[in-house]
View 1 (cartoon, one colour):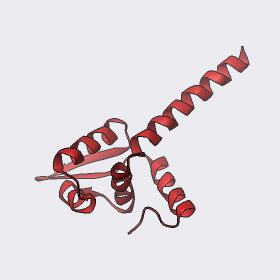
View 2: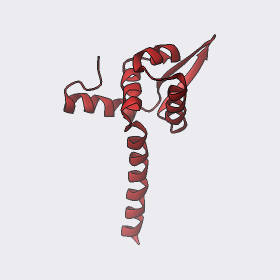
View 3: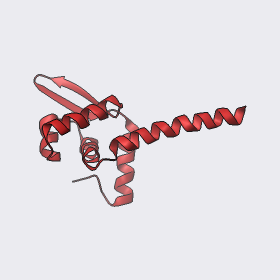
View 4: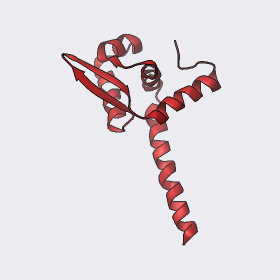
Length: 105
C-alpha cells in the first residue's frame, strides 16, 4: 500500500512539473517568462520585447496566469505582469546556466 501511495504522489508531482514545462515550452512563451524573470513588465513592454501580435500575447499571458506561473496587477491604465512562481525563476536560472545565458538580453 505504501508503494502505491508513493507512486501516486510521484505521478501527481510529475504532472505538475509537466504542466509547467508545457506552458513555457513554446519559444515565445519562454521569451515572455525569460523577460519577466528580470523584472515585471507592462503589456506594452512585453509587446515590444516579444514582437508578437497583441492577440497572441493576450492568449499567452492568459494561459501562463491561469496556470499560476504569472501574476498581474493593474496600476492606472497599465497592467503589470510578473513571475508568480519562484520555481519558474529557478528554471530560467538553470536554463541560463545550461545554455549559456539563453534567457537574458
